[in-house]
Image (cartoon, rainbow over all chains, first blue to last red):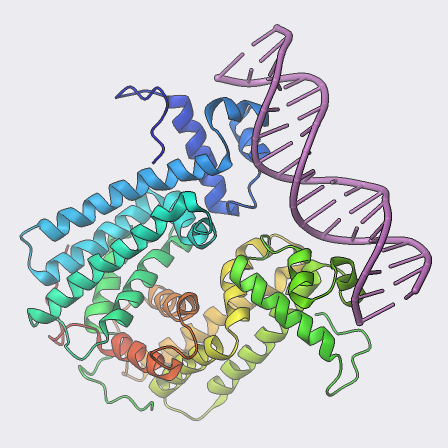
Length: 210
Length: 210
DNA sequence: GTCTATATCAGGATAGAC
DNA sequence: GTCTATCCTGATATAGAC
């Protein structure tokens, strides 16, 4: 996906990356469709036509932004799966890595969160669907290993549990701000505490609902 | 907000409601900006110009959709707060009511979830911000009462806990489908089980992270 | 209540000069 | 690498006939 034309190796196309970062900020903030190429150009201090010297289209821009981010993220998940950690520690690590991505790649995560459904309607972005399936596979593996090892409750619907984890982790991008009252590591820790132990005081609450 | 012109009282303007329901479905599925008035007209079997006999603008449509839904939802929250239930039961009830809204008002919830940030940039939709604040107040009250009553852990950051609950509950609209493998009540129950008791087997897990 | 016809504008993209 | 100028399309909205 989207190899840069003339991509040497190291500190190349800084201007290109600069423009991509500006575009990413706008896409994340206002949405892909709501961001015009003129918005991007304005924010970059150039005119809209000039953008087309660097990129084919607005779509190409968001494509590069998302694909390179996902490559990095899924590389980290693969490392965790391949590691020697015990199942619970792997799960914790995956959560931490995800909050880390929110901290270091806000815009990319936000774009993926908010625009994936729309972008998936284009053939060009089919790989986003692949990534979704891959992500589900990662979390389900981690959860199942946890159950098998006796570290996680065996009465849970893992598919639902996976969704709750995924959703709660990623949606944090909508409110997390770097430099805020809590670091992303603190947030990950609190989140894990809730996820693993629950918020109630009794260990197994005889729930009144139902 | 948006009183229907000529709004008698009971089974009035069916056509209007029909059109609104069609629009809601499209807004929820494709997003507000990505849905054209022609899309709405096509789906309704009329031409785009004819829509303007019923509504001022596309904005008016989404306005009516959201404001009437929110009125209903917050009425339910108010009932819970005013009820005689114990704090834990109130919290559970609030979660159940929310999943109920996802079941009965998918489109409205999805639109609010996906479009609120964008719509809030218009003065006309400032009331959505009000509703957000009100919602935060509801959940924080429920949580604080739970802690005070000794039913919830007192070492939690309630602001974070509130966000986790809110996010996980509402984001379920993105994957929940009525008529699927699990009813919304089952989902609410599983979710409460995770939220209250956690997913780990040990009651207080000595987490290895950090 | 719907249609025809159309005004108006904004957005993505292109060509070629500098 | 950026600018000028401009094309083309599609989108919201309007006016008035039926």
